[in-house]
Amino acid sequence: MSESTAEKLVELAKRRGYFFPSAGAYGGVAGFYTFGPQGAALKQNVEDAWRERFAVREGHQEIDAPTVMPEPVFEASGHLDGFDDMLVECAECGESHRADHLIEDNTAIEEAESIAIEEVEELIDEHQLVCPSCGADLSGEPVDDFNLMFGTNIGPGDSSPGYLRPETAQGIFVEFPLLKEYARNQLPFGVTQIGKAYRNEISPRKSVIRTREFTQAELELFVDPEGEGPDLSRVEDVEVRLYPIGEQEDEEGELIETTIGEAVADGTLASPWIAYHLGIAQEWYERVGVDKSRFRFRQHLSGERAHYASDCWDAEAELDEDWIELAGFAYRGDYDLSKHAEHSDEDFTIFKQYDEPVTVERATVDPDMSYLGPEFGGQAQDVADALESLAEEDRSAFEGEDVTVDVDGEEYTVPVEKTDFSVDEVTESGEHITPHVVEPSFGVDRLLYTILDHAYAEDEVGGEERTYLSLDPEVAPTTVGVFPLMDKEGLGERARDLAAELRAAGLSVNYDDSGAIGRRYRRQDEIGTPFCVTVDYETLEDGTVTVRERDSTEQLRVPLEDLDETLTALSEGDLAFADVDGEPVEED
Ligand code: GAP
Image 1 (tube, rainbow, N blue to C red):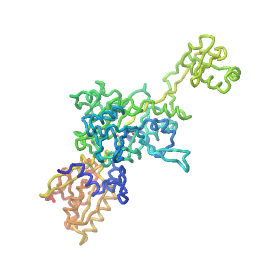
Image 2 (spheres, protein in one colour):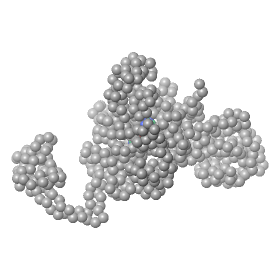
Image 3 (cartoon, protein in one colour):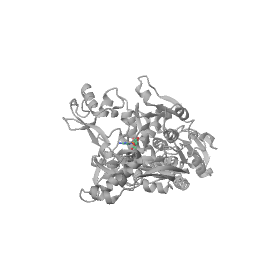
């Protein structure tokens, strides 16, 4: 059986320093990966490109919050109760498996995550699914919810439980009371964060695609639900491939090739904010090297959405004939800010100033505490608060002689005359609103894998098979390989000086003088270095070098003078290799 691209890529990634399972010296542990020198540089370049597009260019601010947060944060966010996957344990070997993945892997069902637990148990029985580790029958085994958060104790003892954050988002939401001040209380405003997130995945798999520690790049955009939307003219012509719910539920359903503008006009994309971000994400993914023909946006089915989302679209990439989620674009509504307001003493609203002050009727109460105190004892203040809320919500409740309020399930009746109920005209300059959240949430590790997979290529050069990564120069870990033809007679020294000069000009350079020149080219091809420069005897005579382009393997003889500018222009896409001023040279 021939090796799959995934197998070849994982092997290349380890051999060339992109990524590999971590702590191998101690047997490793599933779900944790180390990015080697090439991988770490690629990751940095991709994160910088994300930051440039989604933070700087959009005018958003970036923060850096802790990865460990106290339990109340996750009580409020709903992760403690609702952040579960379905687990089935093999009675024979004790291995745990994700029940929905077993169904997806062994039946025609594509999105089993949205199926209820009872139905999942029935499907395991019906299809007589077996344990992937030992082959034992899993029929009849119970399927349970398993919470994905890693727990810990903050400080000695167990009085202060905490969790490793399962998404970077919560670090932004909990700081909203301060962040809104930094944004001068003006909506919309966005806050971004790039950092580690942790999930105790039941079965980590596919190398860096499903791990227990990974990097997210998230934008939380706070918007006024009744305010103006984004400027869609900036993205209306962007071509996208959409897979909405209707097409997924139709047996004959297919991807819709459209533009952002058309999809908003025909209602496929209901939220202009989501539409805007799908548009800029489409352009950005193409820019960093995702193959447009293996990329789509898929809308979440209703049972698949996270507990906080009212609509969600995933960016998905095709890898070895499987669609993998790269990012989610969720409309989180006011869920997060309302929950944190409910569970904390802070103000998670924004004061929205009206264009003109408005005069409205307001119903108010000023309860007589000298009556409520003796009458209701310790409950008096709660009764007073309940009267105040009731006056705002239902002034008709004060029309009779008595008014009744509910406090913690118990009814309290108060004579209306003791409430000092009145309706007055007041002029208001604005109101407090809870902003809605639009969240583009990108996984970095899966994107790195996709970039490598989509860049992976094989061809033949000089009668020999060649593997290369056709990485875009913006993200390639190394921009230029610099070689002396051999390390003698001053060639090595001249090449080392050149490497230092190019580094000083801001280029990422790999100097290599070991082995035959052809092998050095192959090494750079395999790590995806777009350009190589060779210093030879002619260099010492006439001050020229050969510059070779990775994908075409074409070589040109160019003067050293201004080489840094030429390479910078090439790597920034301002100059095509075919337009470089130089003499063609025979291929390697
Ligand atoms: N704040 C929203 C959120 O966390 P998510 O869809 O759960 O949404 C966002 O995660 C992205 O994080 C995913 O699209 C994926 O790229 C990445 N991701 C999630 N779980 C992952 C895992 N176990 N391993 C690697 N990447 C993961």
